[in-house]
Length: 548
Image (cartoon, rainbow, N blue to C red):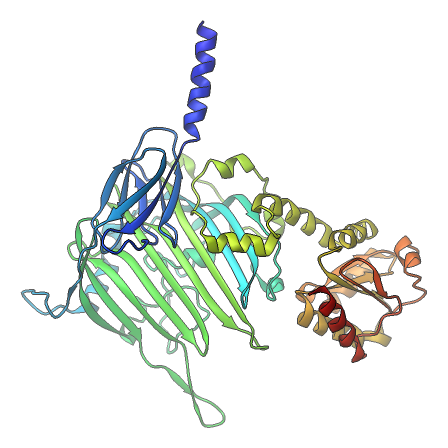
């Protein structure tokens, strides 16, 4: 009897451990969803956030109570019963500056200055670890081309005791779990493998530029608000509330900035506007928003903070934007970083850094982990991303495809024949292939190599350019690939050797030789046109037209 009781209790505990609390948070008056509300487990630092549609999910291992907070709304506390719940939050009207009565006029600039001076009193001032869920997706025009999800640990050696000029100056980063799609965007070659450092620096409480500057840089990931405070104008908008506390709402704008060009005209430089939400009693930042713009390019950043043990920490960081490319295309990106838990035990300390491409490939994948840990709930938009990238294949399966794909595309100097055969088979039904057979003795057709790189940049999302080297010497091949930047913009390289079965199959006698293969996997032209032949693009367009 005791044995069966133990088994029953074990299975009962496992079943309960998998319970999921889910809900949708809406405005009680309008019924509209409330995005990025804080959902925290009472008495702990654990929690999640609502997504753009106000929805959230949270796995729990015991009976809990949840506290939901959001700037401009009354806080709500509920019993976290499993299942789906509709949670209504009552909005609190913002008292505009015209009707707010104080003993003396509100000076918004002084409030902001005091908020920066009060960081040590409002935020954790000693070392701690914060666990995050990370999501990053990109698209070219309307087509999604990249999705990454990860779990990330960040150890802050000095907490918020001192401001940093960039992430990882005084902290450690560790990616513990990762899943992702292939990167099919036009900027794939220039993409950082993962952008943890970038999104961390959305937190203006932790990071500020170190040196004052005459002009704001659009590409600087760290705020200069504190450092260049005098370069901004501030406006007091009114009083709202957050978690039972009154909060100043202050808007700001960077001074109009321009530079004289050589043509005698003035060029408008980077502009920035934003909003700060600061408690009226302790001067703590509880929410920040900023939009930077240069020409038609835009970056928007937001950070939301929640309170735990009388100290604030960020629970949701967002950075998104649009870059206009030279061909008038638009590359868009969106990064979320959502806090999962805070740990302050010194035993949790680790040493780590933002991993590179090879390190990310070596992170083991655990599908059970993903089904039992808090993630920012997907929206129909993000489900659309998964459909765009994987043709309906789940992100879990796409991750296995990504690992295999990367393993076969990288280090093409080893087992090149085997890797090319895999890639050719994997491409059938998906992409057109343009094969370029070459060798290190390529001075007579260097122009074609360079033109092939340009064509790859133009057609890379629809045609795969594969350089097949007949070199027998791997070292010589590596030196030539590096010398002429043949990995540029995502060109695929394999060293197959001079007497390979691939060379025989395509009847290639001497380089250079060019083969064009249709999306169906059939050879379209066994004596393909050189990149220097303008008619090659006519063949590309013909095949692309057939595949649409």
